[in-house]
Length: 592
Image 1 (cartoon, rainbow, N blue to C red):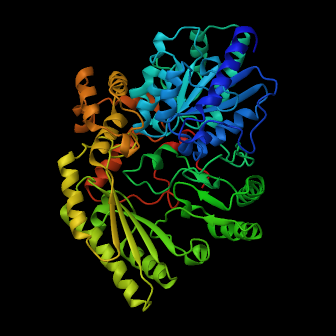
Image 2: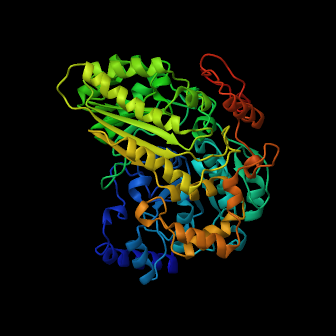
Image 3: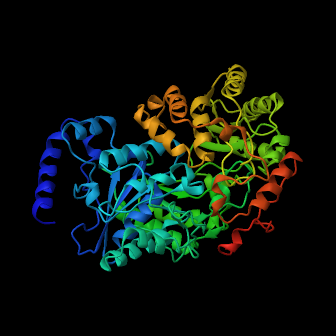
């Protein structure tokens, strides 16, 4: 960095010293965390990895953690971070005419060679525009010339890249350990060869999982073949302040064998690939030694389906006990509760996700648990002295009736009855949480319509009334935000202008309830001339869907057949027992 550029950099650092004294949480912006990689190493490519939410959320994200350390462990590459600044910081940046900057070296975002965004949730779309605005770059890729670095996107929301595609030069579909590294090295090569941005994107479109909106190329999702050999950091950043998930984590496997018909992640992350017990124990020990966290999480979409879970937990618990570290497990399937695994780990709380209140509706959504599973698991839990039970359900599912809602209440009464039969004097607290069903792309329900706000409120009112039970707490997800999420999840490119208009009307940090404004979104659709209702009404089975241009692995014909089975109330077996031919094996053979 020389001349005028170095002078601007010094000026920015000096101004930031004063600004940080005025913001609510300066720890979000100072950088310098424990285990920070070497930012001064010799490099040919400097990448800025942006997360489209606040520091506390982004630092908890395991995907961006992997990619950040992977790039910094790549020869010739340095990667820095940028999170969406809170509104107080954004105001001060504008007031002082300062651009959005990296945490590590406080560089102007525009000075990086490549900029990548991680988008984890539909209600973060306006945050992308917000961050581009703070960077001082045009929102739309076709308005950014050679003077701007390529700006790319990845993350869970890229299942359907269309609503935000116009903002990006490329969208990375699938697992970033594969295509982000390939893209970064390709860009380094193109820069060294003085290749134009257009030619770089042409070459990038040939990589697996790289969709270039300007070319509208078809692509297939990038998949890591062998998780034992895949990059996984064990010397990770330790945050400067409390974050959402403040612990170290290991990832047991990817994919899901259960095939729940509402679950986008369950289909998107197929095929199923496991890490070995030896690899996981080694990673766990290194993480505990390198970070000093007092809690270790065992993560996957359905952790209890890991084929050697008891052996793994036993081995890790021995190592964790030596270091006085708690081992944490996520919510469980009701048919897989093994008390000997969770005894002494979970403590006095237990989380289950039955999703639906009746067996009929569980068959519709392919939950693959029955009444006996529920009774057996809950009876065992009560015997182990559980004091707190958390239950998660979805309302508004296809074919749902009032009887299905009443079934949720009946499960609560069953738990209280089982607790009473145990003869314990300890109180049992039950928390029931309901989210609203959203028909997401790449699921058998992607063709369905979204229930109306009025219907959502009626169902929530029913639940509030019925769950007025001692020691039972009920919480629910907002109706209006569910509608916006559904529109953004299933939209096409026309939505980009509505996203920009929503931002201009003041929509930012929409996933934070205190910042969500439904009326502004409705005004944005109207003022931008976007017919949002068609994305709520659903699609015909023979209709071309906005996301069909991406081969995500699971075939459309398989999803359609699963939809028909749902309406016939027929379940599909767990694919650990039998391959059901979903198509994901075309990307990489399932390892289970």
